[in-house]
Amino acid sequence: MSAQYDAIGAKYVGWKDTPVPTYAEVPSVRKLLAGRIEWRSVLDLACGTGYYSRLFTQWGAARVVGVDVSETMVAAARDAEARAPLGIEYRVADVADLPQVGSFDLATATYLLHYAETPETMSRMCRNIAANLKPGGLLMALLPEPDYVMGRGDTERYGFTYRLVASDKDWRLVHADVHTNPPFSIEYRHWARAVFDEAVRSAGFADLRWHPFEVSPEGLAKFGPGYWRDLIENPMSAILTARLPVSSGR
Ligand SMILES: C[S@@+](CC[C@H](N)C(=O)[O-])C[C@H]1O[C@@H](n2cnc3c(N)ncnc32)[C@H](O)[C@@H]1O
Image 1: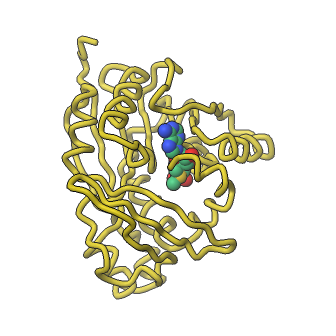
Image 2: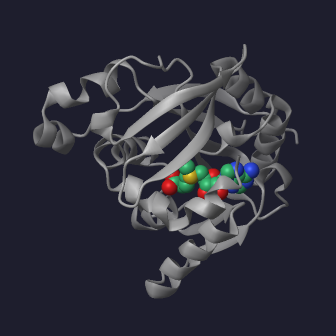
C-alpha cells in the first residue's frame, strides 16, 4: 500500500490546501506541539513531500530530518528544500526497517502507522521509532480515527468520497477518492484502537493519549459551525501521543 505514493507524488499536496487540513488537522497538530517542538530535534516519519517538516522548522524546531519510503515523495521534498532552503535533511527509508538515524527529542508520524500491513509490522515500526528517540522522547502520530463510522455524514463537502473495500475484526480497508485538482485516490486501513495502542506500548512508550481534531477559530468563522458538524461528530482522523520513559532501561 505504501508504493501507491510513488504514483501520487506531489498531487498529495493539493489535499493540504483543503479546509480539513487547513482549519482542523494542522491547527490541532500545532496546538499539541506548542511548547514541545521549539529548539527540539524532530524525526518526521512518512514526511511525504515535507509539508510538516517545513512547518516544524517554522514552528521553531532546531533540526528536522524527514524520512519516507517513497523516492517520488522525497524527491518532491528535496526540490522544495532546494528552492527554499530550511536546513531539512531528507532520507528514503521504510520505517519498518529504519536504521539508527540519530537520537531525537520528538518523532512525528503523520499518517504512517496505518500503512503497516500487519500488527507485527506496526510494532516493528514503533520499536524503530523508539530506538531513534532520546529517553523521555515524544511520539506524535496522526492516524485514521479507529471509531470512524463509515457512511455517516457528508464527506463530499470536505473534498473526498470513499468506499469500504474489505474488513476484518481488527481493520477496515478503505478506498478514498480525493477531489483535488488534480484528483488522486488512496487506500488505507482503519485499524482498531487496540492495535495502535499495543504497537506503541510494546515499543516501550507510555502515557498514551488520543486527541480529537479541533477546528480553529478561523475555520469556524470562515465556514460556520454547521459545516464542521460532521467532522466533529464523526472525525476521520485523530492524534495519538505517547512518551518514552525518562529512564527507559533500553
Ligand atoms: C498520507 S501521506 C502523508 C505525508 C505527510 N506526513 C503529510 O501529512 O503530508 C503518507 C506517506 O507515508 C509514506 N509511507 C507509507 N508507508 C511508509 C513506510 N513503511 N515507511 C516510510 N514511509 C511510509 C508514504 O510514502 C506517504 O508519503
